[in-house]
Image 1 (tube, rainbow, N blue to C red):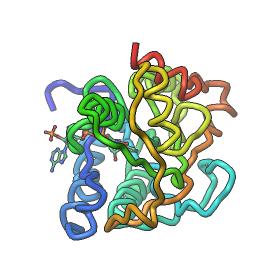
Image 2: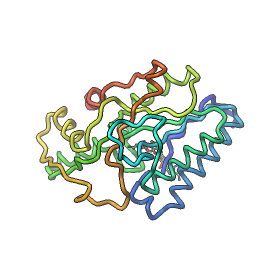
Image 3: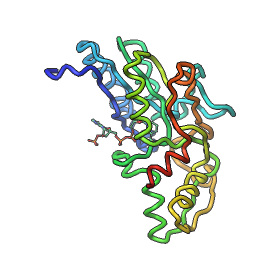
Length: 235
Ligand SMILES: NC(=O)c1ccc[n+]([C@@H]2O[C@H](COP(=O)([O-])OP(=O)(O)OC[C@H]3O[C@@H](n4cnc5c(N)ncnc54)[C@H](OP(=O)(O)O)[C@@H]3O)[C@@H](O)[C@H]2O)c1
């Protein structure tokens, strides 16, 4: 409290999506109720709350990218708990930026998931393992450095509310894996599979591509294509 931050950035989540199906208490505790505590603190300090949410708030039945005006319809406990967090922010935070992003990877790796997708692919390939990746879930992989840069650029403009923030373009997880190996010059034993074959406890949306519509309307979209971001990360 003594620090009196101008900005409180919440990157916390319980996001082991499959575990959340049997741990709704923990999912709602971390992804919603803890957000309520945090926004109260931010309100008291008159800070801007920057809150990170997810592409999974959509059901994936659309065929064109979701904008901030699209209706959410979450399919899993994780996604519902994240939407609950968003709703608390929208209704109770005095100054907030709520950000939906997708397929994050970055230098630190996702601590909660034990690494990120790029690291997992490279590790498996180095071990010479056969790798199967779903080709029927379309996303936009997003580099955390680009996300951080975009947030830093948005904050001083004092445009608040809900924003979609991902790199540009889209691909399936299989296409993303293929690009990782292409750009790294690795000849991996990679093949596509389907969600039907690779069953998980939580249902994931088959299409969760987001349009950075508000950023574009404001002339503030700095996000590059996911392939360029991936090349920069691997370099
Ligand atoms: N990863 C993705 O692909 C993705 C996609 C869309 C949206 N998001 C959202 O982006 C944000 C960041 O995700 P990330 O993958 O970068 O996460 P991450 O690296 O795993 O970071 C999540 C943080 O949450 C903290 N945390 C978890 N449970 C906690 C608890 N009970 N009490 C206090 N702290 C707790 C963890 O702390 P410790 O380090 O101490 O464990 C960790 O630092 C999340 O809001 C997530 O929903 C992620």
